[in-house]
Length: 103
Length: 268
Length: 155
Image 1 (cartoon, rainbow over the protein chains, first blue to last red):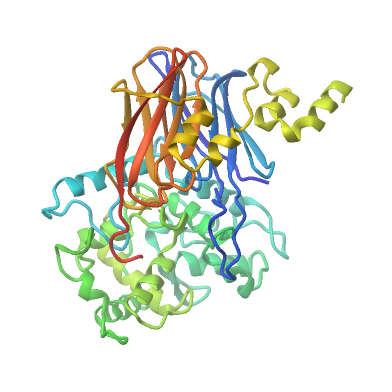
Image 2 (spheres, helix red, strand yellow; image 1 turned 60 degrees about the vertical axis):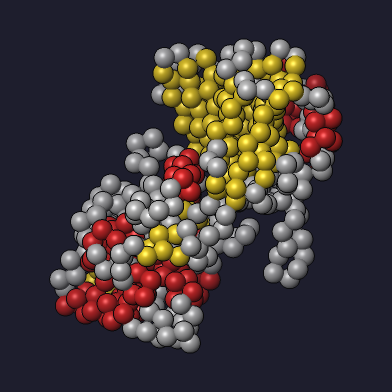
């Protein structure tokens, strides 16, 4: 199973800032292993962030997003204690959802 | 994560940021690059993983590492990393964080030494448990001062051995650590080199490991840092957890003592 | 499990994340979005990528800023942010001109989400980074060159 994400979400002056670190190899499909075989592409393809169940960001990634992807964004609204959830799925169907409270 | 001081950093080897080298805007832009990476260090993912590995009962004895004594008593991790390496009466050896951790995994959890150390650093697709655990243990010393006075006779002896290794020229290039890291204001191409014979230089180097290497996509431990330094000096590579590597750490930590830890770091 | 849910899960394989989330009850069907844009991510030129994104003819604009260092010490991890003060920004895409597949990431911004995203991308070499923004149904773009160095001893 995929390792947990690290999510920070803080509300200030009516804006919530979200910073996410995901644990993922993000293999490009262009790297060769020690025996010269291409390592198949393995990367997060889609991500969604929801504030109290309402979508606040949707993203699509290609293989050029760095290993252990980082993402930061801001949305209007959000109060301390509200739920902020982030979900991703990769090209092999692995997925992960983590949730934090906005502080 | 938000309470952590940004573990800023400089070059990767034992680099030192901000020396007055006339690189002007280039250095400014490199500093900007490092700053943008410091907020959101992927090493924090490894801290989470390390914490779970520390607390989960595992191995033939189905035990967690919570009774592991890193020098301050069983399970006491706050500040432990900043005070390593140190002498341990139970093994009668000076041990660093990694040799002590492996000792605990063998003695408390019943793992075989060979199995524990096989994956002492990660390769693409094969994460290292040791890296995760060391990142977690290191994080428990974030914000604390390095304190390795090396007063115990065995620690003092190891500090001397480390100092000797630091200055000893060896290998096909007749190279020593001191050639690159024994003077102020040296650099290799864009990377400023720290003077590890001073408290400021050693402090800058030692306080920011373990560190996430963006070029490797992995956290490097101090063992890996030093063993790779020796490889780059074209020396024969020491074995993982060798006394020579621990001795160098005692020497460097002693020199760095008093510097505040900013770990995990992030470097190119 | 009711039949409707089972069918939804069975179909999940081809639905992408939002289909799966909808099937799992995590989001309402109304939130579900487009599938992963394979043709855009597989495109090998800027022109083909723009075409696949429906952004052909995007005009250069000063209403977008790319926040990134001029120089990256390592191309494996290059921080890139895109910010726009325009109202009604619906989507943002980040392209790396000289990568084998230029499109790195695209973002869809529901109303209320600020036109400000930051991520980290891989760059094979020094290249222009292009940001494309869709606002009020129109596409605009800007670009910035980022130099990639691999200086110093490898350690």
